[in-house]
Length: 359
Ligand code: PAP
Image (cartoon, rainbow, N blue to C red; front, side, top):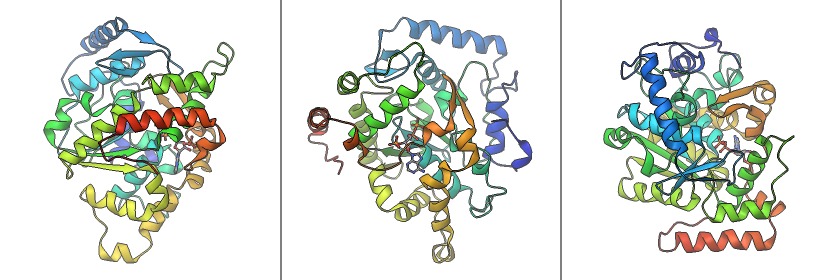
């Protein structure tokens, strides 16, 4: 997908597109560093991460271990670069998820809600979602912003800026926690999260070189914590604990509850980010419009999501891969009772005593 400046006005979307997608030369960075310094930093982090232990996991790439967390080499480098450079503003909103827990959906709902005055949700001819996958509208810090061939200038983006991340709470850039910016975390039932991840990773593998993975082997990796940004349960608990300590700063949502009550959850999101719907808006059709615009079928059926691609640090991903079934409970169609039991038992033992459950 090419950047189409004419489709945007003065908003986060236009800046992000310009800064993050133009493979810019030095546009002036937050740290004022030149291109050569920038390359050196990435080389340094890449060399460093290469020395970490690595192993295969539920991923198309090898997963490197750092402080008990797993991520692919480029993602780990992105985490480190974001930690060094990212300067959060108190008005920023960070969307945090594990891969395949509904990131695309959350990005679309939050973007459409926050920018509802700029982009009417019923105006297909102008809405950014007609031209861009939600991943291009709300970029990942470690996959799209802090990557070695671009020097982002995030200073020019008007508030409120929206960013996304798969990082565990414990690895977030210090400026995020120091700034007190808001974090919205979306979790998903572990068996569904695993099933979605298995399909996605299988699709990304080099099909000519690598055989499809056995589901049983992938369940082992998952339960042993070797999945991208895993261990899955530790990731959940990081944000769950953060929410219980700072409920005004961290909102913890569940995919299954959003499926049941999307309208209520959109209202909750708008309030949490300090942009509540007015009584007139509540009476009108806008909340319903946002839910419809961001619904699974509506997004999946857009041409950009049928034939477009999104550039992420590990490659160019076909947008259609972000839209598979979009339901809760699809694991029953894939996992054997034994596999399901194994994941359930791991969940029970890891979450015991934390009052966090999934229906
Ligand atoms: P990411 O973390 O790599 O960005 P993410 O968007 O979390 O991916 O994962 C895609 C999952 O969200 C898919 O789940 P499935 O494999 O179980 O089907 C996808 O179908 C689902 N999804 C994408 N968009 C929506 C949506 N608008 N509403 C509900 N679910 C969605």
